[in-house]
Structures are given as structure tokens and as C-alpha cells.
Image (cartoon, rainbow, N blue to C red; front, side, top):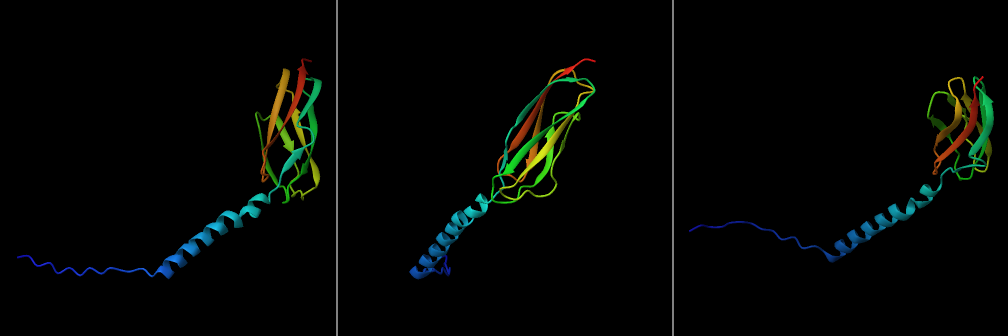
Length: 145
């Protein structure tokens, strides 16, 4: 005959311990969900007065430029870190220092027409810490010399 000598211990949970655990879990969830909301809302926001500029007819070989004014409509400093362009013929001069909330500034897009002809439309994507994405366009018609 097999003898089964298993010692099985049953743990009884104290109801006050269970309630305490649930209380701490719910408190943690409330803190995570609602406690970080102001942090997530406190961000920079970039707003351009104009996003498209048409420079009309330009001569091949010219370097043309357009200024774009923008405002930080957020509640944190705006920091522009870089930009993306479609080709190396387009460059951007942008402020390197943070732009305080409510302040305005400008960036300058330069387009070298030496290797371009006919209608040109260049898009520049601004990379920053703003909660919204931003881009500007410069258009022109490059005439042959």
C-alpha cells in the first residue's frame, strides 16, 4: 500500500490584505494615468504665418531665398534641431537657441538654381521638439539663361 505523506499548506488570505493590495493598485493606476497628463500636455507647438512662398520667375544659377516667420504657441521652449530636404540644392538657416513660449522667430530657406530648370517645388520638413509636425514649401520657375 502506498502511503502518501504530502504536506500541503493552504494559505488563507486576510481580507484586509487583499483590500490593501487593491487600494495600492488602483492608486498606482490613477497616478500613472492622470498624474502624467500635465507633463504630456506641456509641450512646444510651432505655428508658421505662411507655409508656402512662390518666388515667381528666377534666372538659372541664382541662389534664391525665402523667410518664414513662426511662433511657439506651446508652453515649453521650442528647439529646432534639424531639417529634411529633397535635395542638396536646398538649405535652411534656423535659430539654434530655444524659442520661448509666445515668442516669434524666422527661418530662411535657400535654393540654389544652378542645376534646376523649369518649375521647382521644394518641401522642407522641420525637425523639432514640437508636438506638431511642420513643413514649408518654396516654389519658383527657373528660366534658362
